[in-house]
Image (cartoon, rainbow, N blue to C red; front, side, top):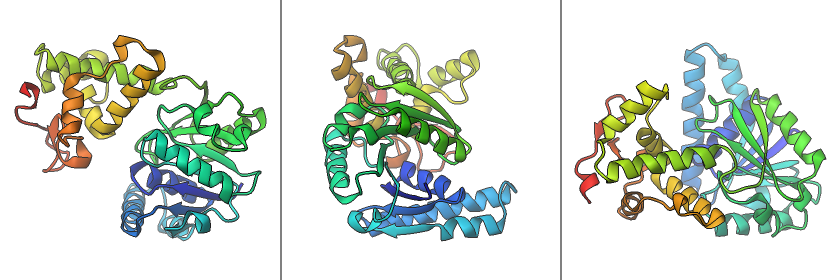
Length: 297
């Protein structure tokens, strides 16, 4: 495979496009918004500049990577002549089902359709296509150019051939693929999100403050950042969406999202992307400032 389309130019989409383009793939980056595409390319360029400054790539590598990228606001135009599509749209099941139903009509029958979903059933997504054997999960970690792990999730009907090819493709990107089966949250978020949710419950019940909770987990458990800071980076809306998938999928009260998380997302406090979550991000990320009074709401 040499021709890849990436659906969505947001944080995950532009990161995935960056990595494929850096390793020699011809990449069509697709989004309904030209402004989002421009922002995505600007982010890729900035991240490439950072790699050049660290001497992990050369200026020639940067130029070659950017030359491997093309942008499209039309899905039909963007997926022409590709062998693989990686969907990285918002974590919304109805949106993803619509995208995959459209992709099934717009691409040749042999094209592999992958999704970067962090929790939604691959089997359910595959059910709206005529090629469930060629639908697979390719869950990259954020930031994509840095993080090595890719969860490769097999749906009920995903073929061995497709799974092996996507595992090999991930290795070509210098990633470490791990094959998992299709259960709510897969592995990464089935373990991570309940921990984050429990940290929010601990805050909500007044056991400790934001900095105290994060400090305990960083110093006591050797985590590179605390769960509340990590939730801000992931996006509190994304955390909530994943908890809802776990709660619906398993029907166990232990997966019920904390009311504080629900209220913060409802109030528009989504973390880094909105400028405020458990921390205030309006002054950048160097100095963490705990957001005021949210635990009392």
